[in-house]
Length: 221
Image (cartoon, rainbow, N blue to C red):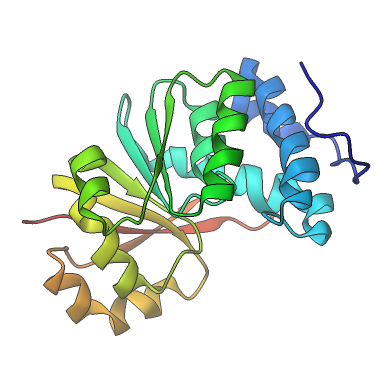
């Protein structure tokens, strides 16, 4: 495989033992992705230099474990994908999924396309645009699952994400420990967007030092 860039940047630590349980025989692809994040991701301003030493726990595994609450063969839209989180780790860990990355900024879209091409991720597609754009809704709407990571407060996020889900589908967004409070606070916005009363699931137990939280809201209409 070709080098990511010609620059000299910190190398990520090797994967923890738990990574093999998550990625199986595709662990080498996750390692390659970590190299992209640590090199081109830092150079292009997608990942902060201080994040390199904690790429696996904080970013890659944290993203991949959302697959614990996504059904077999689902089509997943990743809103505001940025450097490919959570979509790319999810697609590596779950080759049965179709993962569509939505990102408005050209430099990030360029990075995503380069990574997808280098890793040979046939189950990943990249779309440039904002989740609320009609062109994006037309292109990727009707998804089984819409996911995201650290994009916006829950109410605003559901306003963008629920229109991309099929009726009966759901948003399953990675959030912080205060997600339950966000769901209560933004309940009116969620209902207005056509969503159910939200619930919180915990993922990553036994994989991450600190399990993470997924806000789940079903699209009702």
